[in-house]
Image (cartoon, rainbow, N blue to C red):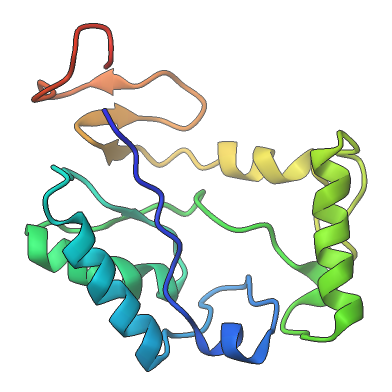
Length: 163
């Protein structure tokens, strides 16, 4: 199985530089829509069998062209999400951007107890993702958050041991 991670197309918040992590999030710009179309063309021959999206509008809008082209319905996962910006939400000033990135840098360096101002700690973030107990399909496997995948269908083209 191969997993492709695709960042969303450009949003109006990207243009303004705002930290936009809250639901429903900003829509794609015209450029973002063209980027989603380009991604669809780039992915058409990759054998994609499932598409997963978060609850944010931009992920649905980015996945839409690929899903339509491949005849797939994106599966929304409430546990698939960005690190929330907390007090920095919708701010575009240097202090907010550096504070957001600085907190994430602390987490990457192992300081998971350091909280995002007005938000969660590095310890709480993966827990929030794991708490999502909605099963979802991912390239033919049924996955429940925090558990091993259970195959539902044969995986065409998988080498032995790659399920």
